[in-house]
Length: 97
Image (cartoon, rainbow, N blue to C red; front, side, top):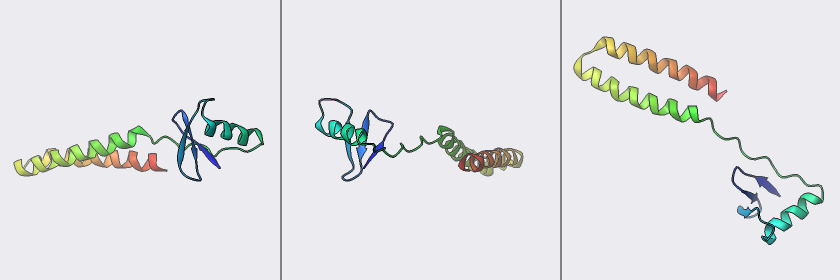
């Protein structure tokens, strides 16, 4: 059995080998013969949403800014950062669904 990838390669599940998509590659020719017999490879995994990584980075930055604000006793800045963080967490939850 095989699985599509987002690379120019097919994943052979029996040994997790990546098979380059070249007619000169005998493993790729085996894959093409397998498909010609009516078989269908598994679909590629979805590409993760890059916004999720951005949100995590923004939340880490907010944490650092919050620590500075705590040291400086800036309660207004802490409140603003907490609001911003909560907005990001809501967006993150919506992306995870």
